[in-house]
Image (cartoon, rainbow, N blue to C red; front, side):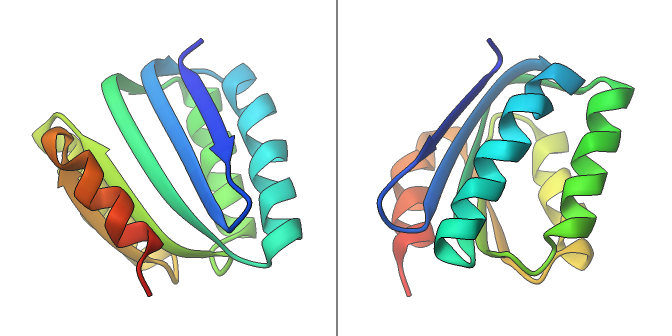
Length: 119
């Protein structure tokens, strides 16, 4: 499965994605994320892309709908990736969220998690 979701007792959500995301991945990801938002009011996300190849069209649509519904429900978003286009994607998403967004190269995963957890 290309998506792993983990929420801790605080408001930290870790999402690890690989391969190409499908609508079916979002059928799992969206309810899990919304439960975390319900529980905490706002969440902080560590979004790790490993061997990531983007979204199928239907998955991209689901992602856009989620972002529109929850643009104010994410406090921080650390995007961790391996490719230049992933860094570009982090910059592109900034206007569509109230979250603080920061990109980290894959070898800085520990720093990304530390940043997400910091106040």
